[in-house]
Image (cartoon, rainbow, N blue to C red; front, side, top):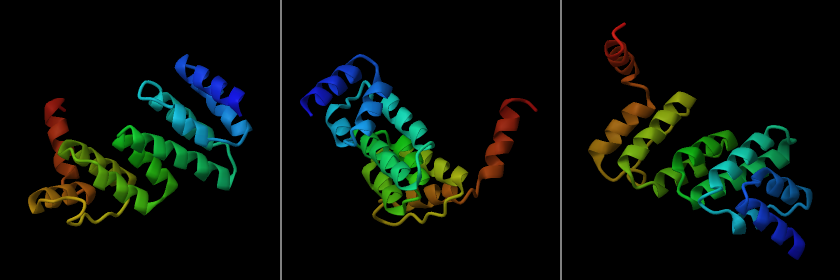
Length: 159
């Protein structure tokens, strides 16, 4: 497996993420990907993984999406990790994204993603410390202020 590690390392350092992923899928050892991905190629690698998963049969697509989710979480790409967790339809992964994220603005973005996806989600004390923030985020998830947002947009673009 040493030649495979060297090839994967070289490909990831030289912007050939699809070649590295294809090789690892061919030798059935995607675990090596976790060792060699860094912050400069994480988004391209995961983008290829999520695109590639669409062409795989049932158990394999879940496995590939799970690797993408793991990489996104390693590099704290929470919005992309949430989208991948929604594709996996895994509520535990969705909660893990929320508990890992500390930034309130990013949590708002995560709530908008959940609202757009139509996912029902209840925020509890573990996911959001302050009652005031939790209520505001829950309103976003429940699309309570959706029409207000559209009206504000219409005013901004003068329609």
